[in-house]
Image (cartoon, rainbow, N blue to C red; front, side, top):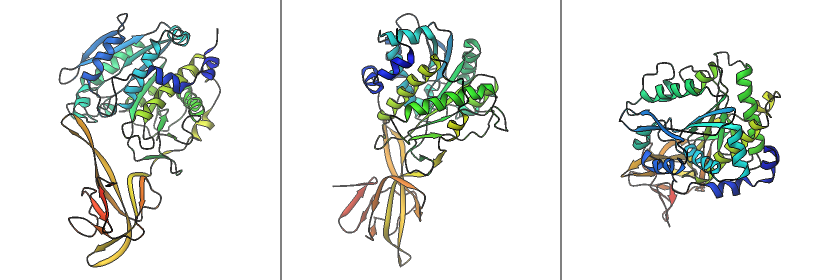
Length: 394
């Protein structure tokens, strides 16, 4: 029988994703109503249970599958408006049900305990916080919220060997100063203020370094390393402090993929790659140098940058640049991406996911001849080139 490494080398992970993609869920707005049918479909052998209720009385589900010795705890949508890793997690759960030899080996090697939506109230409201306006990822010490208590109880009862803390990050993040978006970023959280590396954290570091090596074949140069400042109130820092190797996933922007349907594929590939690595015990060597060479996750992007724009400010004409950013706004059950002007000036060192060189064309809008912060990105450059919601309107 093939080992995991041999199998993953001969498998096309992109084709494996296409085969197992959960097509009933898509886009950015993912609620409990959307995932409950999927959970029920996957509940083939009583793997599904309810571990409690949210502030507003919504069910919080645990899905446990496998009989292997290596125990993996995964949770997603701790922040309600961060749904990409939830989609990737369901794609992976579909793989575990596809009847393949690879799935059987995964199930015989691992036991997976998944909380796919820790914050269903925040998911419905499309907010980072829960219904009490508390950031659950800053509540790991106070445990003031029912959702935080349930995650801690799951951790203590399951006694995982590894924790996967699954999140999204905004489009503003790039990979160092490369001008590439941070499609995926990782972190082995610190366990103390000094950000030292002990045996527990080293396991997470080695796993991330090995995942990065695999992922560079799929998204070269688009993987970042998240800031490791210590905050014991964050759940990843707490679990690392408690002696369980913890990996933070941050699903970010891929070019022109505002619905994060391409990014979910790379989340799936990252998950599959990580379990292949763990199954082969391929994280025993010290890969800290490889880890720290992953470029830092930096705030270097705007959704739109307009360059060399001629504006009239208090009767004085000058050439400048300005930037606009989408706000994700929940309107009648849909997420609307509405672009607003957020910065005016030099903007050197920043990139735009969309960039336009006005070549000295005049700025005109209903409110005047210069962009204004927090105004909608609806304007003209020159007499005939119209922009609506940040984009050229034909």
